[in-house]
Amino acid sequence: MKRGEILALLGSNGVGKTTAVKILTTLLKPDSGSVTVNGFDFTSNPDHVRQAISLTGQFTAVDEVLTGRENLIMIAKLRYLKNPRLVADDMLKRFGLTEAAVRKASTYSGGMRRRLDISLSLVGKPQIVFLTPIFG
Image (tube, rainbow, N blue to C red):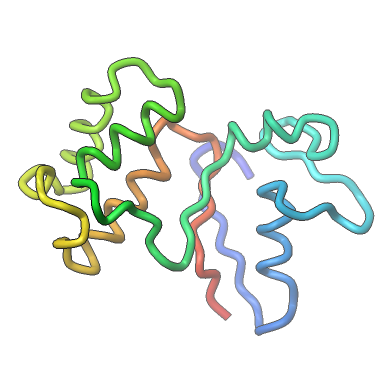
């Protein structure tokens, strides 16, 4: 894949879509072959691979006790970004969540929660973002 491209991984149940994502996210070692993510070898540089990717799962992974803004600030701090509040405000604006920023995530609609979840995955500008579920 080239920068800016989007790849969809489609297939029937049981063909290995989830296994492939687990391998690409360093959660599972391949039985054979080699894996390179963003130029880093999976086995010799797993930390570099993990720094280059982000994964948004099938179910939202937001902290529902925190506000949308607090969720984003927390992730920015965990990624050691400068100006976490500025990062949070930018993501809230990009995802149309500015008005709901001070509300607890538990009060968000399903769609708003999903937008917050995806925005959390994009904090720190990872090189590769995996969005699941992968349909099949």
